[in-house]
Length: 101
Image 1 (cartoon, rainbow, N blue to C red):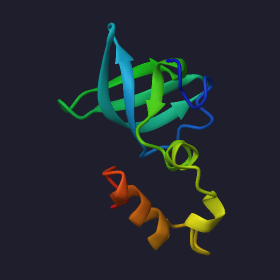
Image 2 (image 1 turned 90 degrees about the vertical axis):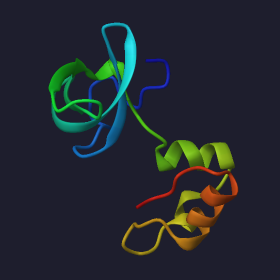
Image 3 (image 1 turned 180 degrees about the vertical axis):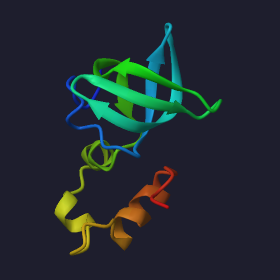
C-alpha cells in the first residue's frame, strides 16, 4: 500500500481497525495478530481470518495521519493517559471524521 504505516508490521497494533489488500481488492478488518511482516486480519464482512503481508495493510483513520492533515500538535490532543482530548474530538467533528469510541 502506498501509505501503509509500516511494512514490517511494527506500527500495526493488535485490535486496530485496518484496510487490507486481499486478491486485488481493499477490505475492512481488525488486526488479530502480528508476526514479523505478516498480519492476521479478521474481516468485517465475514467471520474469517487471513494472513496478509504487512505491506498490504494500512490503519484506518489513524490519529497521527489525521493530526498531520489537520496540522494539529498531537501533544495538545491527548490527556495524561494518552487518550484523545476534547480538542481532538472537536477537530474531528469539525471535519466530519468519526472520532474515538
